[in-house]
Length: 75
Image 1 (cartoon, helix red, strand yellow):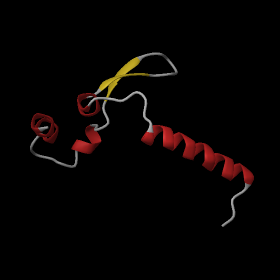
Image 2 (cartoon, rainbow, N blue to C red):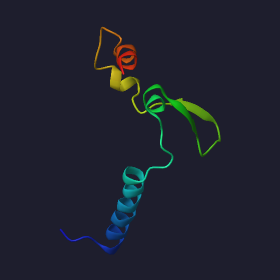
Image 3 (cartoon, rainbow, N blue to C red):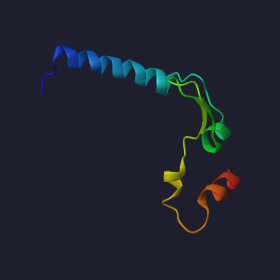
């Protein structure tokens, strides 16, 4: 499959952004910030919201024994 010039340009932009995000992330977050959450600013309205990389939908699959509390307590 051949890509058009615009598709190649989009692919290049995505690749450049991926390198920044995965190879040279900034800022670096601590383990606690990733799991327990940290304040993240919404660029559209300037409001802050506590967010974590591991959110409720991840924990939902492990029903019956409060997996979030067990995981955070263990690690």
